[in-house]
Length: 327
Length: 192
Image (cartoon, rainbow over all chains, first blue to last red; front, side, top):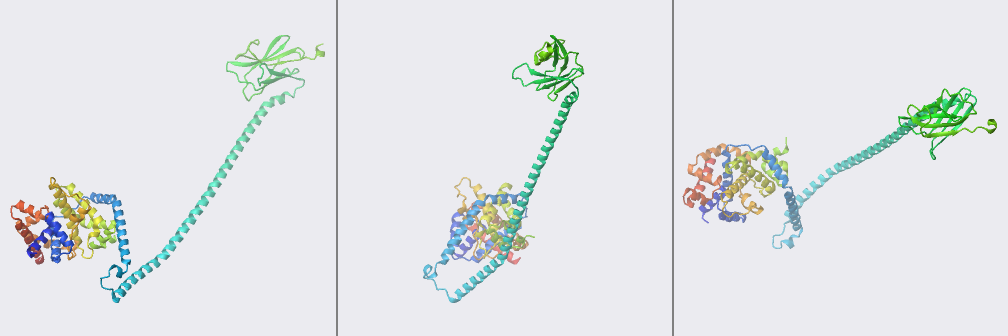
């Protein structure tokens, strides 16, 4: 090749102004290590690369770095594939190196002892370095192991403590709840006792009188759970009405108690019992003789009461006089 | 201070070839300025400039191992890479009506990733920057015609025949002018 043409080609190649065909030819020539003044080509390449140094330098936008970083992140799969490919290549190269030189390269010159020792020494040295590095790593591994064991123990301990505290607080909560329930039931008991006392106080007091007659009141309707009693002391002209399971009435209605003697009904009083109230004192009973009392009725009347029984009879009690007496 | 700041350009490229992102970041901090300025000089607009630079650093990330680390001129490799990429973009936009080679990995390896001489002297950014005043003086001594030819070839991406066509001179003259311009530049640089 003409030397001048070679130089021109190298200049054009270095300046990057070769047409495609010439570029391919020249690149292939270089790749095949064709004869060329490579030092001179290198100088020309370094020279042309220095041309932009005279430009007034500008800084790129700060965001450009982020854009590049994002692009690289997007290339992760490609890079992973590249790494994998490289590893495969390295492995296949190593496998090739394991093949005995006699079988792989029978025509090549034999390796001399000097080269072999030199290679061995270099490899042994390398191996020694690798071994010493591994030895240095061992205590680190051991300390790592200890660290892990310690970590696991702490985790177990913490877990146990948490479980213990959880259980303790759970049992304490249950205990508190039980105590609360107990307090509530005691309160209820006190209340019921109070109710009992308030309910039965009238009854107890009433029984301090003498000559008491008791008239049982039964429901007018069959299957009704309601019942009652009328306690009368003829000596004191006082009474006590006991009412059990009496349904509450609408506000415009009341229960009215009547005693019937000789066919005439006398009003004893009106009552609006609540659920808790069982006993109603009757401070003044009309004068009646014991023998004349025939019937006791509890009727449902308007709120202000009625002069004569007009409403539905709710409870009643028939007084049975002893025949001997009546005679 | 990051250990990468202490790395030479070759060491950085070696680390990048092992996909060390911190090394690439350091390389970006060192070279982004010169590569951006060069790309901006070639590319038609800001957006294209930035896209090219993003692509250049992606190529560096993927193909750093293609640099011969034994005889490495990192500065020349990077400048050539950025220049090749930018010129390729400009040429593609210029010859939109012509049949274009598909831009794939094979094309990139062949036409974009630089092929440097096996006997090139090592040159890094720090050394190259020291040459700047000399380079300025050496280039200033070229004739306008020589400067223009280098400008058309290096920054505009015209080929020898395109320059010949543009300047309406024989292609032999263009070849000769490029050779002469580079030789004078080299001599002037040596003189200082």
